[in-house]
Structures are given as C-alpha cells and as structure tokens.
Image (cartoon, rainbow over all chains, first blue to last red):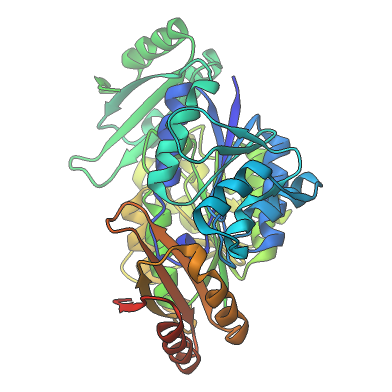
Length: 238
Length: 238
C-alpha cells in the first residue's frame, strides 16, 4: 500500500495561536483512501528545520503532504525549503506569474508565490481557482484549513489504496489481564494490527481492543478468536 | 528560554482510531509556562522509528515530553525505545515492581511496566498514585489524555520560563498588500515574531497579524508601528 507523511509547517500551531485542523482532516481522508499514514510532524517556519524534515519524509514515504508557508509574506518559506530539500533552484512559473500579475499587478511580494521549485508540476484538477503545486511526491498545500479541504478533495482521485477495515471489542478486564491473549493473537495473525487502549475517562473503566487489516478474513478470524479468549469481551461498533 | 519537543507515540492517532488530545493540551500548557515548543511528532508504535525520533529530540531540546506506549500490552514499546535511544539497558525498578505485585500479583505482562531505562528517576510530585518516570530530559507520559493532564499538572512547577506575550491586529487588505510592511517590521524588531494568517473562512476575508515577544516594550512599539502602517489595520483581542 502507498505510504504517506504529513508535514505541518507553522510556528502558529506550536505557539498555540491557532489549533491545527489540517492533520485531523488528512488523517481521516488518507485512511478512507487506504494510504498508510506513518508520520505527522509539526515544524516551525525555519528553513533548516523545514529542509531537514522535508528531506526525511520525501525519501521515506510514497506521498508527502505539507501544509502552510506558501503565501506572500516574510514568514512564508515553504517553496524555498522544498527547493533546497530536492536540491533544485526556484524558478518563476509563467502561468502563476500571469495569474498573480492580473490580480495584484507588479507586486513583488505576491510574485514570490510564483517562484516554485524547478521541476514542480501544476495540477488543475477540479474547480479550484489556483492550481495545486506538486514537487515529485510532495503535495504542497497552503495552511488555511478551508483551502486544504477544497484542494485535497479536488486531487484525491489520484491516490488509491485498499482501505483498512476495523473491528473493535471492549472489556471491563484490566489491560494486564488481557496482555498475554493479545500477544498470542498478534503472533497468530501478523497481518492484523491489534491495539489496546484503556479508557479511564469512562466509568466503569474499560479497555478497547482494536483490530485492523486489509484482509477481512484474517480480521474476522482474529476478532472471533479474541471474543472467545479475552475475559468479558463484547463486540463494539467499529 | 527552555525549549521543548513533544513526541506522540501512537499508531492509533495515525490511523484515526482516536483523535490526539495530548498535543493540543501540551501546546497550551507549555506556552503558559514560557517554554518554547519547537517540534511535535506523531510516530507509530515501531521501535526503529521511535528510537530515531526520541534521539533527535533528546539531543535537540531542553525538555521532551512523550505520550503513549507505557502499558502492559505487546504494542507498548516506549520504555525499550527510550532505553535504546539513551544507550542504556532496561532494569526492573523495585518500587514499581512492588506496586505492581500488590495490585496484580506475579503478572508478567504487568511487571513489564516496572522495566524502565537504567538511570530513570521517579518523581512523586502531587497526589498522583503512580510516580512520573523521567529519563534525564525526557518526561514519559502514558497515552490516556486524562492521565496526561493529571500528571503534567502535578509536575509543571518544575518547568519555568518567561511566558510570551501576544498582540494582534487585523485588516481587510490582502496579504500581498501588507507583505512589505511586515518585512520591514520583522527587520526592525528582530525579537518580535510576526505572523500573518489569512482567514478565508470568514466574510469579509481578513488577515490576522500576530506579534509575539517576551519583551513587552518591543512588542508594543512594533504593534503601534504596524497599526500605523498596515492599510486598514485595527487592533484585535490577543
């Protein structure tokens, strides 16, 4: 399955000025599409940190989605950081240049938005007014949540995987009492990802056991076995 | 000022099974305390990835706060990963061992929670029933949000910095029209962190400009200057 990483570029998130809405949105969408999200990182708007993290992600994952840092102001450094991460120069893209000139005239700050990494593509999918800039396996979104949602939904037909399926059971037993049974199941069904999550917020305290897999037969076999062997297990809505 | 990083250990977050509540909580608390949060990473429950990210953070930040992976089940790998990141063995901690034995008897799975990295400290602050495990500059929290909140509030008196102050202005001008003014202000007041955030969700569209600094005089001078020079600027509640 294709793997994915998300890089949230934004001092404003780390300092608590704005709550991040983009990672939760992308988590849900990538899961529905069947991509395996393996990493989320929030970095400040600082070139060396951005370059280092972008390099790690573009070489380690099939797809990388970044948000933030693409506007016209001094704190917008994503295009320069992406160029450096890929080892290419920034070039002024003629179509973006004309779009910006027709909106803002010869505004030097706005024209920075036309300076994109050499080799970047423009995707014109859907009804969006501004094309999506993509550098090889890196999809470069703005930071504004509403725009991220619009832009992702316009391009999401390009990504496909087999969605993961989930089963859940819960029990009033303590995690320590069910640990051995879970370990046995994890060894017996290695393709099923088994998680165990105590919920102390709820009374009576419960443990939620989740099973995930792309193979529904293995998933059902594992779920049935755990329902039999976890003390006090009941199936729960996934 | 002390710097900080947050490492969220949890496949369940990346797969969307649970929404992360710990990073938003820690963002707010670290900001109130005056620590500079420089990085948030969400990694899956996989040893090599956990070890690599923990190493990066413990050597790059004054304080690191991890959440998740400290229970008794097969997917709880944080203590082994921390030991590997610091290059020390796991040792059975006698006080934790006795606490676990008195609760669960000789339960091997539960006793894994007493196997902590050699050199780790136990902090007994506050009214918490279970001590906080800390390995040098790494504070190891569980994943359950309610416990993270309780445990952080019990130990937060140990961390201190000078809180950052904020000023905000907003304008109906486009970001491109105010970019030059912001660049000038950023150069003139290098100790003030200036951010610019368009809000397309709201009508009429606005740009929020935030200023942050620990020096209130520089902050007020910068804010006053921007109120004068940003077209259509109005001050906004911070």
